[in-house]
Length: 182
Image (tube, rainbow, N blue to C red; front, side, top):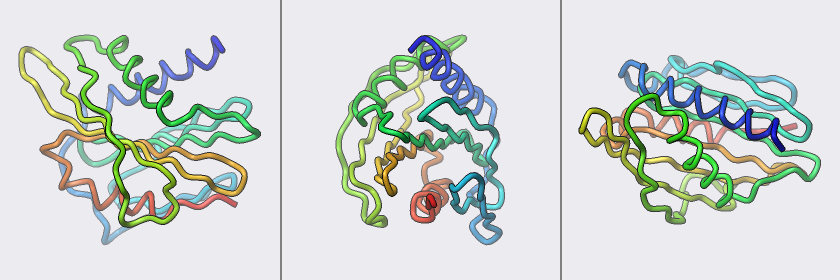
């Protein structure tokens, strides 16, 4: 369990780095690229990339950098290992403030929402919150999509500032729609 908590802190640290230091350009759907590794495949915009993977028994996390301050990640839970979606969302929220070098993140509101574009998604939760840095409040949206793929559970996590959502949402949709596991 201690190792899992450390891994989650590492994942949240990576998310924080991308939130603070990314540049801003729309998702390049015209030059999409495929990712295939160890039975997982999906399509990403041409200006996004997989920047890391974490693995431990029963769990795999794929970290995706976008072309903006937005982030995405894929958690694959196998062999019966699984957080329920609400616990997963709460873990992300609780870990985020511990890792912020400056500023703070509020808990915001968490609501279930319907996903029109994907029949793979069993449940989706949205967390609307703000990050405050130097007395400037920046509204964000984090979406969590839970899927069952064969015998595994998958959660795809996306997060962006509300201002940049239009730049990246089609890329998030492409990732979710194209996700496959062999």
